[in-house]
Amino acid sequence: MEQVLFINCCIRREQSRTQKLADYMMQCLKELDTYEIKEICLMDEALQYFSDGFFLQRERLLEKQDLQHPRFRYAREFAQADKIVIAAPFWDLSFPALLKVYIENLCVEGITFGYNETGFTGLCWANHMVFLTTRGGFYQDNPMEMGSRYLEAMSHFFGIERYDCIAADGLDAGVRPVEEILQEAKEKIDTLIKTF
Image (tube, rainbow, N blue to C red; front, side, top):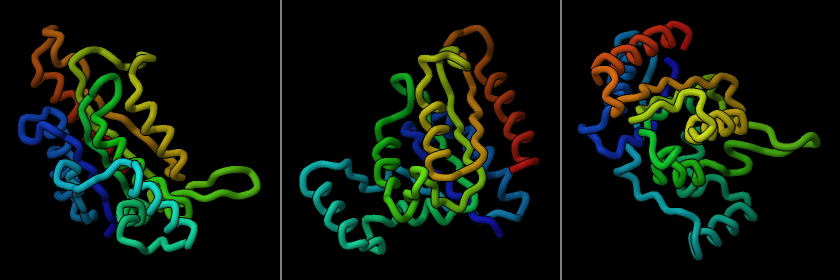
């Protein structure tokens, strides 16, 4: 069975519209019975951003090449997954800072990326990363949308060949019913899963 790493940053939890999309995709994958799903709920993790002693500890561990240290577990877990699914709402033109802190902890030379004579090279096993998000306004193909663009760049940095974003846009615009927009996003998930 292939392992799907589901990174849950739906900070409103059960009130989150993004969580509805994520729950739908996870249920669809479970029904296929070909994937083992491991969820990391970022709201329940003791994530730390790089400051003072925490940063210096990281530098010392990397200098010693102690890549098995527990603080690198997020990076090892991410690097060994076959598929990645990230769910996070649109937040201040990208996504919640909690997700950025998690990504900061993923970036470990020798685990998720390395260097060679031509520059950096991704070391992750996954061949597909999917970003699920919901947005109150309309940001599809809008240069002010930074979340999906950033995650797509990171997927290439990590060596993940395929990246897809499924976004439910315009949920707070009052133009169409919210459930109708979410249903369209679920239909896009159905299509994506066929080639996941």
